[in-house]
Image 1 (cartoon, rainbow, N blue to C red):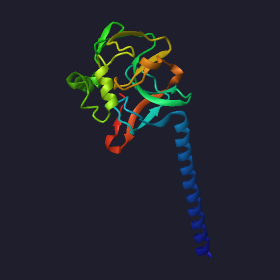
Image 2 (image 1 turned 90 degrees about the vertical axis):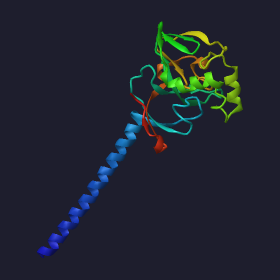
Image 3 (image 1 turned 60 degrees about the horizontal axis):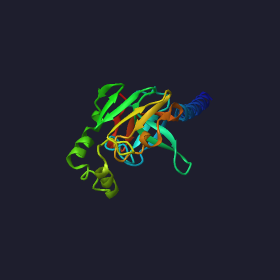
Length: 213
């Protein structure tokens, strides 16, 4: 009799343990889903506008609630020519109210010269051969580079140009200034168009890197 009671107690204990484990699993999944909806999302890099910092097909984690600072890599929302909303990955160059000036690939923000170290490799390649070797995979990109007077030029083909960023808006550029379609084409982005900050690259695993500083 005592043996049967002990066995029943063990079975009941095992059942309670299973129920507890299932509840913990449900809570964890629920927490992940809720955090995914509120705090973060995964985004895939499309195109070459952020080369060489980010490559096409890489997967990123974006934090929706992060404060946006100058030179952060962000995801923004824009409407394409077909009226469809899409997400783009760019770098914040101008903060609200900034005065930006580009002079032959040198950036000045509010009158102060600012080094764009993340552009160093492509700027050097532009000086060497106008990125012809780098763009060997695309005749179109090679033609764009050949026609550009500088690595960073506006859409009027000027290497010297000035931009005033409206209050409450951000000026976003791709790291590959030759290829990227960005604020030079569509203007600055309102704060509610900024989805969030890119904090890490997680796939491919060999390219894993924390991007938030």
